[in-house]
Length: 178
Image 1: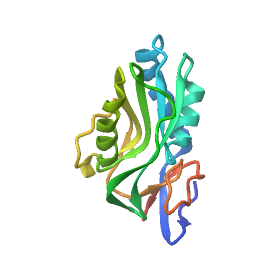
Image 2: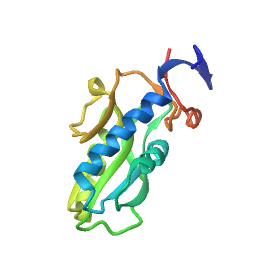
Image 3: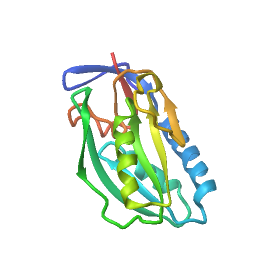
């Protein structure tokens, strides 16, 4: 990793390497497999940020499962808007199904707190949450993360699917704002 990069008008320093991310994603997948290998769960991928996590997670999942994609938004620039919009919802019936939500990052917890409540109307059998990054000190809304990736400090990050105004998602490593 180089020492510093610029994405749009912000500078970032190296944070978590792609190799470390893949190691942790594999560990998360193995933990999920222990819990669900005989249950055919549905993975709900929160777009757009969790697309990289989902792709790598899928390569480590070796049991029957299904995948669906949702799009939620609560961010503008580097800050939460305080409201959650469902831009793209479930495309399958999840009544009586085990759901595993794949999220890129949990900070205030607003988005997942809102969506997990919203999912109740679909009557799933269970809902669990996997998140690559968790900012515990920023959490305002109570959210239980069943499959945590990395606990990080409350600083803005980009890369591995996370963006800054739609840029930087393609970066393999994670970078932290300077």
